[in-house]
Image (cartoon, rainbow over all chains, first blue to last red; front, side, top):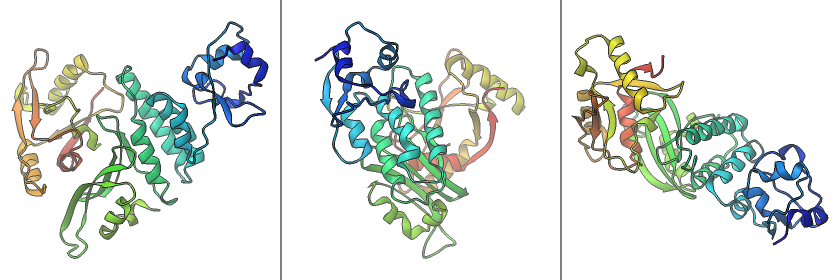
Length: 220
Length: 115
């Protein structure tokens, strides 16, 4: 453990444009494999340090996460779901190569704010659901913009609806699990409506819905 | 959105209101009474809406189109400050998305929850 003053001797904090955000990651300028953990865990610390706070603040220097995906890195750093969710939302325009990435981020931020306002003591959005949501949208750059909502369980649910009996909804349950419901023309008997639902892994869901022609609605 | 028809993990039924309870036979008056009741117990967002469904149609629609022929039921569950409060019973758990989708299909009208 070190104090902020001693860390200031060692660390040249670069605040940049994200300085006031809880998602700020502080890197050691000469040691990119290290970061300052407690700043990230406490939203008030960056501002305090920025204004040359000198009283000791306990903190811990930890190796910067080295694993692959941005979400894995965030998982290693952040302690609670709310910080994870905020960080991920902020990074969506960079991490998702979708035309509507910014709009998706704005919508999730809105849902986060409303959820937090409704239940300040509860998590706003499940971070596991958020991770699954990102995996889904990372599978194709052509996804159109869906309706996005939160379920009462704080999971993300998205839906594309193009008319009566033509919709596809998917709830992101955990890191790899989804629950979907689709109403679409029956592939073999288009005059009939197929109504299908089920629990399926994030890796399989697109393959499972493909025969129902859903991809032509949800991909641009 | 369909999430309005999904249960919270602690809920046994979906909270709804029985419009005809007041015997106004005037949708505007019914809506106002519902809004008054909801505002006393919930934080109503600016975009929130009240959806109107016909009970019989909903029960039939869900029964005939769900894989398990789900039998929903609606019961009057009056509360002290909300005498028309009722509940839709028969949803399994908080992830019953398919049934929520079917219920949403039979929405007849929507009104702003806040005036």
